[in-house]
Amino acid sequence: MNLITIAWKSIRQRALASMLTALSVALGVALMVTVLVMYGVIDQSFNQTASGYDLIVGAKGSPLQLVLNTVFHFGKPVENIPYLYYKEIKENPRIAHAIPLAMGDTTQEGGFRIVGTIPEFFGVEYMPGKKYGFYRRDGAQQDKFISRPFEAVIGSSVARANNWDIGSTFKPVHGVDDGSGDAHVHDEEFTIVGVLAPTGTPNDKAVFVHLDGFFMIEGHEKPADEAAAKAKALAIARGEDPDAVVEPKTPDEEQHSTDAHGGHDHGHHHGPLPDEQKEVTAILIRCKSEIVTPQLQAVINDRPEAQAVSPVGQIRNLFSLFIDNVRLLLLVLITLIIVVSGVGVFVSIYNSMSDRRREIAIMRALGARRGSVFSIILSESILLCVGGGLAGVLLGHLLILAAAPYIELQSGLIINPWSFEPVELVLIPGLVVLASLIGMVPGMTAYRTDVAKSLAN
Picture: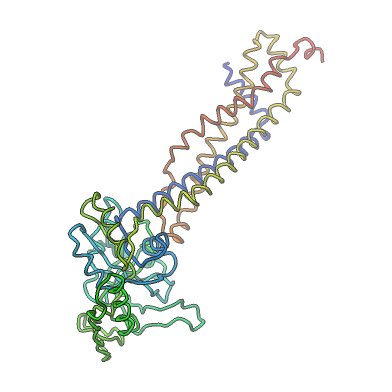
C-alpha cells in the first residue's frame, strides 16, 4: 500500500470534514476561474470589435465617448459632422473604405439603436477575418443588403427580442418611448430585408437602415439657416472666405404616400435633402496601409471639422484605467478567499492530529519511518487542495455555461464556457505549493510523535 493510498483512506475516514474543506477550496477556485474567463471574453470582444476599423472620425470632443457611442452604441450622439465633409474625406487616396453612420433614433419595440449607413458597411470585415453573414430566422442563408431607402437589416438579438423576421416593418422613434409622451414616433416605415447572423458584437442589438432613407425621415434635416451658419463658421476656421459658401436650397416639402423606389407606403416623408443639410454622426475608416493611418489621423485632427481617433487605442486606455484595476482587485480578493480556504485545510488536518496519534504510533511501531508519516500528512493536504481545485475549475466553467445564454441575451456577448485562460494553468501548481506549506506543521507534528507515549495513552 503506497503513501497516496494511505492518505486517501485517511481522508475517507473523515469524509464530511474533508468534503467541506475541499468544497471551500473549490468555491474559491470557481470564483477565480469565472472572473478570468469573463474578463478574457470581455477583453477579446472589446478589442476585436474595435479593431475592425483603423480610425473613427466624428465631431470634436471626447475620443472615448466617440468610440463608445459609435462602435458599442453606448450613450447618445452629441454632435454631428457635415455630410459634405464625408464626401470629401472618402475621396482621399489613402482610404480604402469610408463608411458613414447616422444615429439618433431607436425602435419602438425594445429601444434598439437605429443606425443609418450604406450597403458597403456589410461588405467590410467587422473583425479581422470575419464578415457579416445573413440568415433568416428559419435558418436559411440569404444575402440581402439594404439597397433601397426604406429597407433595413437587423441584428440577431433584435430579431429574437422583437420576434421580427424578413418582411416585418417598424417605425423609428426619436427619444425614448417610455410612455411619458416625450418620444416622437416618425411616420416613415422601414421594411426588414435581412437578419444578421450572430457576431458577438454590439451590432447584434442594432438596426441598420439605408442612409438615404434615414435622411428622408422628417426632422432629420439640418435647418437651412443653421447649415449655412455652420458652413461659414468652418470656412472661417479654415481661413477661407465665408461669403463663398453656397447657401443650401430648401428641400421639397411635398408629402408622398408611396415610396417611388420600393413601391410601398412608408408613411409621410419629404424628398431627398440637399447635401448641405445632411449630417452624419461618425465615419468608419479603413486605410489602404497601416503606415498611413497615423499620418491621416494627424491631418484630420489638425482641421476644424472633426477628430479622428484610434478605436483600439481608446479601448486599451479604458481597460488600463478601469477594467484592469477592477480585475486586479477581484483577483486579490479571490486569492485571499483561496488562502482562507487553505487555512481551513490546515485547521482540519491539524485538529485531526490529536485523534490520530495512536494510529501514527502504530504505523511507526510496524516499521514506518518518520519521513513516511510526514509524507502521508503532506499528501492529505495536497489531495484536499488539488481535488478541490480541479472541482473548482470544473464548477467555474459550469457556472459560465449556465450564465452564457442570459449574458448573450442581455449584452450580445457570445461566450464559450470551455475557453481556458493561460492563468488557469498556474492554479493547480499554485495549489500544490499552498498545500505543501499548509501540510508542513501537521506533518512535523506527526514526524515528532512519541511512539511509546502515544501507545501507552
